[in-house]
Image (cartoon, rainbow, N blue to C red; front, top):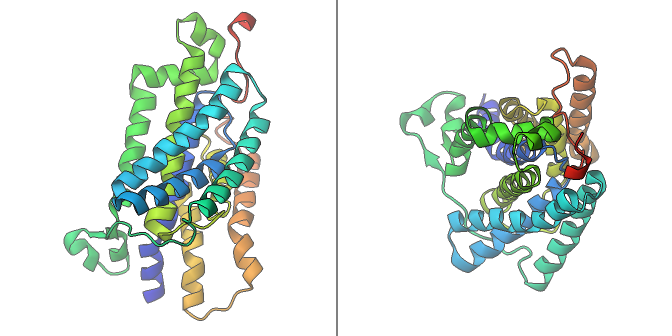
Length: 308
């Protein structure tokens, strides 16, 4: 029972980065831009968060720095895919390698590697923390509590606001959206920046609030799992949140099993999240009971002169 209680209490800490990164990808891809650079942007957010935290010792400002840094780096990707019409798959992969090298270099040169930082204290929710088994769910930091609210705001924006409906229209049929007077290129550009800011926040969460230090490559492939999570969720934010809890629960279970004295092969433990990701993607490909929910123009560049 103690193992289950500890597992549930640690699950949100592992799930939040997956959730925020997947939500950022959904915003970008709902506008028709295939984003494979989440791993790199999370590294940028993690490095920037630690750097700002070491400078100002304010976790809130550090997380804001993570968002701004990732959004700034994503401008390079946005220019390539929106205006230069570079292949979005190649541009996303190039962004990952660029960010991996950049963050590794800067982290070493600036001396931020393995420098501990102070994160946010947990915020217990009164008597709820005394509940059996699930009490740990109500002993989290502020960002974990705010994550469902962020999802609710994004869902409201995408489905209940004019600009959100325009963003989705651009992702479904940019030619029709352009004919209706919607600025396709600007909408895609802003969607990339907004989505990248959330991905940077996911990286900042890992570095500033979870591990509380910077190590080169510390995201450990979570950005790639977030890409698979978006496919699993079929570009639905709420399904992405549920999937993040699934993947977060798997990651949170591994250290709990080790603490309970259950011996598992090291490489089996390391590959488990990716095996689950592959299994989920295969299941989604075979299931598709509700039809294909992929944005109609996902991955397709747009040029007004080619409007049909």
